[in-house]
Length: 265
Image (cartoon, rainbow, N blue to C red; front, top):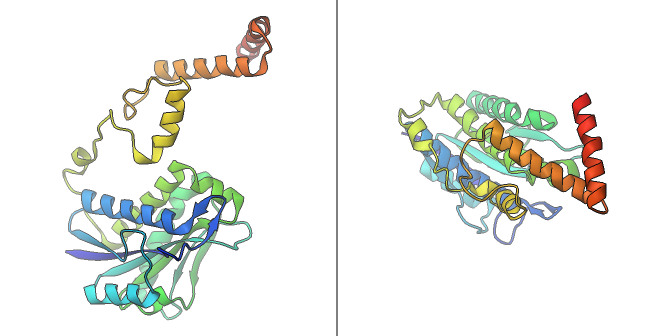
């Protein structure tokens, strides 16, 4: 059984970076909890141990001591960044890292950037630094810095559920690649979702879209047909016209003008 250590940075009285209504300790804890869930659910032969699973404060040496005593096979410390100019994603290994730490960093960095690149995230490359979490661990160790909370473009990305999911997926795929994990035969069945249950990361958006009448609130997890997409776009179109029109006559006139524009496309 492969043992992986996951360290959600900060916690408790130590909030980490905090900007644009975002707090690092909360973001990284949620990311790590989902990484653990997906790895143990979808892959054979891996057990994930967290330095913290709730909002508690731990000293750095408490974290590495815990993982060293557990004798985990690799350690990934997950953070968000600050004071980074244009922002972006980067990873760190120790200045005198082992070859396995180098391999772990390459696997993680490549997989995570593959997931984040479609969102315009800057690649700040693989780096080395004398950081406690990668220096004092007795196993291959990497620290990931997942976007900059004080860079508005990155903060806006971190507020998007699909970007958080990309960060989670990148970590999972990088870890699976490093260890050569095999997906469970039942993984597809196990991950089939209840279409009547909204995913946690989409709860706010789904509630807002339902409240505003774009969806009827049923089957949030179902696939969407082109017909259903057309209905949603039709409702958006009508509301857009109402937004910029002053009265019903204006709406009808704008509808005709918009129809001409659409027909010309």
